[in-house]
Image 1 (cartoon, rainbow, N blue to C red):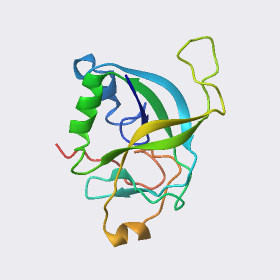
Image 2: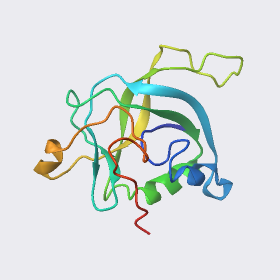
Image 3: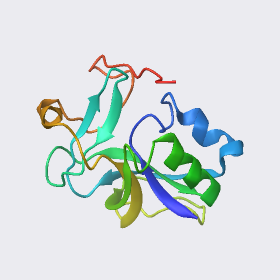
Length: 151
């Protein structure tokens, strides 16, 4: 089992969350909401309005997202879905748990710092850095950059 931080279209309520729920892709269990410990630029780019977390720690904002525990089958599905390693790299980032205290043994402790995998863009065009950065991605956000499925 692996821990993965989702910040974009694969979060609850976003266009690709159905892929996380589809057990044909593997198992994914939501654990907690979290925020990156370091600041990163989260930008929306391409004609499809895809959210990208750029591998530039210390720039941008502390990004909000969701931590999932996934099995190997789901991890392989996610790698393929996000085109890792062509578009994204899967690297470790430190997160601060924003919620999660409760009765379940799988619940993470509020305020705890942990490290998980995240899909991050390690290469980008210089003009991407001129784009607005976001703390939290939502396809229906005020930015008016609704996600368009590239398929």
